[in-house]
Structures are given as C-alpha cells and as structure tokens.
Amino acid sequence: MAVHDGYARFTAYELLLPDPEFPNRRLATIGAEARERGVDAGNPAAFVMLASVQGALAELREEGAGPESAHEHAGILFFAYHFWRAGTEVVLVRRKTVRTLLAGGAETVGEPAWEDGLAGRAGYVQLPQHLVWMESPDQPPESVDGFFWCCDEGGVLHLALVAGIRRDRPGFVVATVPPQPLAAMPGWGSGPAREGGGDFATALPGAELEGLVGIRTHAEVFKLAAVLLGRVAHEAPEPHPHRPPAAPGSGPRPSDSDPRPTRLPFAVL
Image (cartoon, rainbow, N blue to C red; front, side, top):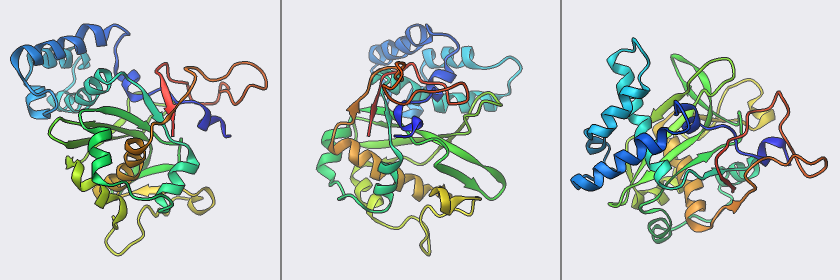
C-alpha cells in the first residue's frame, strides 16, 4: 500500500481554524443560536445571516482583507460547521477505489440508499494526493485534496471542492457548485459529464502514465461526488487508527517530505 493510502492528510478544516478552541467557542455558538431562533442552518442563505456566524467570520477575516474575503470565508464556514456537527470524521479514498468507480466498475447505488445513508449528514471526502486536478482555461491546474459535502433535511446535497493545499503557500482554493437533490445523484453517477465524451480526461504531463483525473465542469464534480458518496451511502468506510503507524514494519508512515497527517479521525474507502 502506498504511504498516502495509509493515512489521511492535514485538512482544509484544520487549516481554517485559528486555534484549537475555535469550534467550541464559535461553531457551538452557531448551533445554539440556530436552535434558539428556529433557523435551518442547512440553508446557506439563512446560515450566513446568523449573528454568531458574522462573529466567527470577523474572527477569521485577516486584517486589511476586503469584503470578498468575508464571502469566501462564509462559504467554507458553512461546510466547516456541518463537518464539525457531524463529528469531523474524514473519509480517505484509496487510489484503487477512485479508479475503479470512475471506470464504472461498481453497481450504481439507487435513490433509497442515498436517502437512508446521507440525509441529514455531512462530511469530508479526501482523495489520493495529486491524483485529481481542477483545471480552468485562465488558471494553472490545482491538485484537488477532496470535497466537503452536506445534505440538509430537505434532501438537498451541498458540495465544495477543496484544492491547492501546498507546503509553499498558505490557504487553499474552494470551489462550490450548485446544490443538487439527492434524488438526482444516481443519474449523475451513471451519465456522461462532458459534452462529446472524455469525462475526467486531462492533458497534464504524465497523465496517462500516472492515471491522472481532470475536472473541468460542474458535471464532473457531481459525477465524482456521486460515485464516491454512493459508495459511502451503500457501505460504511473501514475505520482506521487515528495516527499513521509508527513502529518499524507495522505499515507505511510519513517521512519529513510526506504530507502532514491529520489529527482528525478517519476511515478508509
């Protein structure tokens, strides 16, 4: 097993937190206010109007940052809150799993399994490092770390792709896509995602040798999420020890040049 299949990496959620007490200080307050006011925190528009959300955004905002910074932080804070509420367990997907599912090597999971397995839940799916790349005509490609997902009580799935987590720069890139009803996700998993075909193809150097995956359209985000979350809905990922193995011979472990391990609990798919 490759070392990067053996442990989950430091996440965008952990990078977002200004200090370890932020969830107890800010995210718990958001939940309490939403319950007190009867606000559906699963609705992004209602979520951002909460006073406690505005307080959290003020703390996250860097000094001198413009108004666009608040908008960007609001989007990721929505997913961070629901990820925290759900218990902060990361689902790490192995390379073999990604390739098998994208190649159509698994049975499509039907709508009832989605409703039963995902409704009212949230999480973070972490992809193999440097396997999936987000591409756009006017920006350099960014390595996709994974995606946040949150399904509200009305059966609507919210997704945010996370990319650009690198040692040589702070922060990360977040790309949100339009929400989708859970009932539509099985169709996204089995249908084409690019006009004219070639779903997930990329012209990046070494793409064929390394089996790289490219994402250029919203439809490809939906399809990627559909095949992976369909598996999560259908079968529980395998729990994994909290930290990478440390004893010689006990399995892969990170070196100084490898990605920093997460401190969050994780399971493997």
